[in-house]
Image 1 (tube, helix red, strand yellow):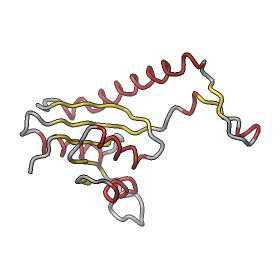
Image 2: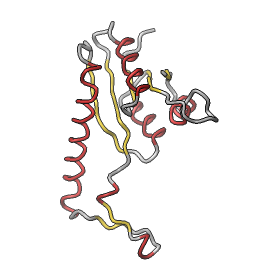
Image 3: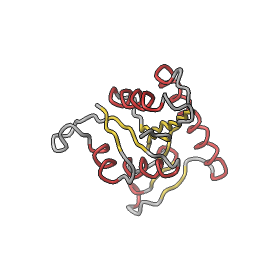
Length: 158
């Protein structure tokens, strides 16, 4: 069974690099294959001042003018996309299929990865596992959550 549309969550770890290499290996024989590399990051909290420390109500007040907020977020996202693309450039060099690399904002990594896979209509998620948690053993908590919750196959790479 050949996978044609693969999502690779990426965090610049050794395991994420191994997952990306495995995805490339799996898809290299199909010139129509697509790989989507995504780095999940929290929304830009530094652009919002929360008054929870002052009033206890948690009302957010932007430190960027309302008219400029979307532009600032878009510029920052473009910079982060470029950094990700530069980071993986050596690994993906020579991949014959289509490849995208972008940063996506998400509060919950597991849900964001699954929703991104749905957005791109992926047929496989290939991700690394740090295996740092004693409870999860060799599988990290995010990879474990994706493995448990995704509706498509998930390959966890060490």
